[in-house]
Length: 320
Ligand code: HSE
Image (cartoon, rainbow, N blue to C red):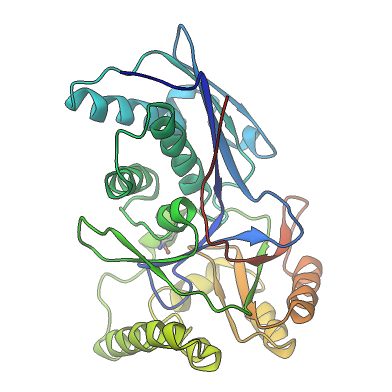
């Protein structure tokens, strides 16, 4: 098999899972307007032994044993899938720059997984197509979070706002973006494990909630296609997870009230939290909300807030 580069780097952006109204189905990539790189990076290089090095702001929050790191597990999985096609993956050195906080609700594990698979796939001249890669990413994400869901891996990989189909092809649909919307995100600095946040959800959904869930999704997708911001924003309520997860997020109700007072069109939990997000249609309100959240919602020095747009593209690849 031919390889073009000796080193391939992939950056995969942070993302909002669920986007309030689309539990496990809807996700959005994030790009801070101030140019901050909010996402993890994985570099794959030719080597004589497999290895993993980890750097970055949140490197010390990961298990020290390389074998427990999801990025090395992605390599093993990628190698198995290549072997199933009769192809060999030689020894590789992997380097993860862990820039997203763990258990933050910003798609931290998904970002590492997407960067790893995207770098590996590019390094070997793209043996897997987009849908196959997404299925592989979702499976790895499931190993960490306790169930397979694609609402972080898909937007991180593809960019934009993605909607999962539940079929093998296309795995994900890209929805139109509201052109004037800003997305303020705030990570409190606390950690919420996705598997724990899923454990507390009831196994059954009431009929009335199922009806609201279905109505909201249908109307929201229609409103995006019509660029009807008011209608779209009115659909952004979480009837599945937020009522049960709020108790894991100290200060959530106050943050929502303050954001609404500063002009937020919608407010919710990003993924399984504790990050929250607010949607506005102008940058000034978005900044005001970010400032309020930084002062009142952030609980320690690891917390932060960014005003973001949804980028049209997800991963960025560089080869050398
Ligand atoms: N859809 C997932 C959940 C996202 O809410 O559990 C986790 O980041």
